[in-house]
Length: 590
Ligand SMILES: Nc1ncnc2c1ncn2[C@@H]1O[C@H](COP(=O)(O)OP(=O)(O)OP(=O)(O)O)[C@@H](O)[C@H]1O
Ligand SMILES: [Mg+2]
Image (cartoon, rainbow, N blue to C red; front, side, top):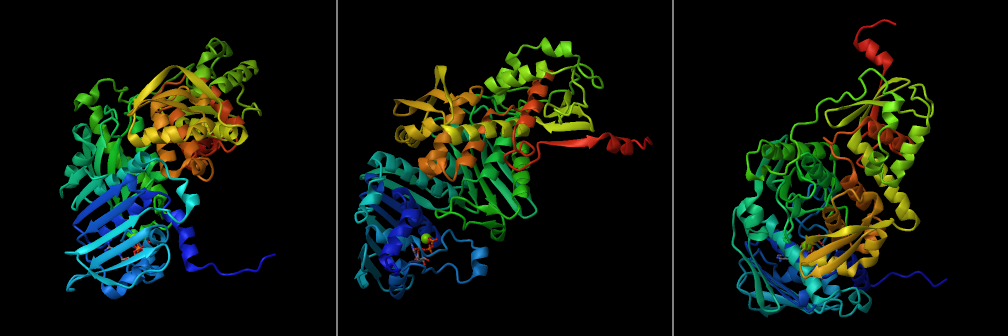
């Protein structure tokens, strides 16, 4: 066994760099965040070859004094927090004191800065190892940070870099996120000596218009809701807005762009009732809350957060958006056409409310109903159901009993031996689909099915690049996507269980997840998030009227599915009201 020894600092930074700056876009994000933390009101960015050859960020922020310059490049050196308490309520974007050390360890790096009040600027340089002593430099105000030849000294990492166009697509996306987060700051971006973006300081809505285009702006509704120290504001696209190639799903928590499962789910749920199936939701939303209620120190690139009260956050976001979107239901806008029925389905009494449906009525339903709900598995459930003798609530085999009716387009009411069973049909179906996908992926990959007529979708450069680079990840998830133009993709195959879902919306969500986290992470530690997103798309929507046989098929699938008692987001999928409880409610002695 070789002896144990300490790693030298440079190697530690190179290892850390793998996590913090996994591609030029991540380095760019760190530099832009540093400029914002320094109070800059003007930031100009220059990239060459997507950031691989050069990233240069110049700002007019507070700058760094001569004596602090070498510290800025040291690991675990930060001016932003001092104690654990500071960390727990951190309001700055940076706090680890790790970004510059990581970038400097894997690039030719220079930092020139002029602190407010100093006679001139000072500059230090590093080339992956020793840092030079500060030398006088000419900078009018603020800082200029430059990182060239990223990963020049870590060839293994360099191999993972994609083409300059792909890296530029990622970098530009990073730039847009940061620009959206701070409308009060002026931003410019130049790539390979060509000016790409010039954004003047603007109101939040003005910035959204500038970054996402007029089409989005014209189709969106303002949201601004405050409640108990929480605020959610921004723009959400009306349901009829079809996302163009500038697709837009941006969520910021205290100014930080995040991908969060709880928030994404709340948005999806809010759109569920109003979004026509071939439309894509689009939004730029800012959630503001006491920093102590959210932990940003969860992920190396801080893209994930953890809320102290995630259920409360879900409720708040869901209700705020549902209210904003409900305005569209009244036909207030031109977006009204093609909308699903806005009022919830009325209480349906199929086969009589207090009577079990007769078996004759059940068998006369074509088995295709089950198939639409559950694919091939549903047909089995249907067959199993039809084989069973007359449905008796006492039936031990069917603990969830038999369907009586659908309530409010959302709940299935069923009767079992204990009394009444109430099922949240969307949550239950989502769980079932999720478990099916999970089992399939753990086996051989999700079985795929070619679509008869491939659906085409407009796609951003990043989406196209992601599709080109990740065919095997996509295929394991059951997708085949083809690039048909620089800004268009065709969805040729989709997961068999999800043929009913909107294939382009589904593909887009999967691509975004892969673009954000990388194919291998999506299949490894983010697998459950990915599958739960996919399942949510496929799950039966609220307001879809179900027939009694469909409802029974759902109950049977729930019984057959492990962990079907909770949806993927931890909410219960059903509960029981016993006859005893009903008797008590009606003060009825037995
Ligand atoms: N553009 C800048 N203007 C002024 N000071 C800066 C700038 N960039 C970095 N600094 C200083 O250098 C320090 C180190 O930056 P670095 O990005 O490595 O760490 P951090 O921002 O504190 O934390 P994190 O690793 O989470 O980003 C910062 O704390 C800040 O004091
Ligand atoms: Mg930083």
